[in-house]
Amino acid sequence: MDLPRAFADAIIQHAREDDPNECCGVLAGKDGAVVKHYRMSNVSPEGERPYRYSTDGKELLKVINETDDNGWEILAFYHSHTHSPAMPSQADVRLATWPTSYYMIVSLMDKARPAIRAYHIIDGKVTEEPVRIVA
Image (cartoon, rainbow, N blue to C red; front, top):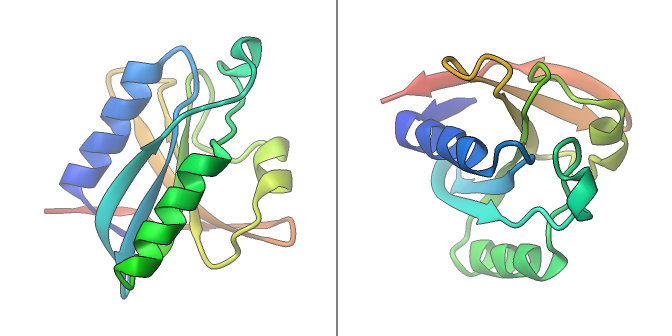
């Protein structure tokens, strides 16, 4: 996946701002090119937010409607791991329900150098996909 630097920076900024809680959001676009970043609210119970995320259903519906209205598609769902690698947890794999989208994770384990990785998760099978930060 080619990820424009501005969107990579926005995702990392979102993760840093929500730290120590996990952040979550959506990237939308057309023909594989990202054109819009949506920050989502982590609505997991307060005590679970440092290690779990859940998107707000009403916010997600607005994103789906806007992407449909613009002829875009949801390219990726992203969230952060504040103290662990950018690899899907068992919960991440279990909750993955959009087989055509990437699942991106930004790790803040090394706060100075966050890592962004992307995966396809289909029927519990996880396949890492390369992320290339582009201008």
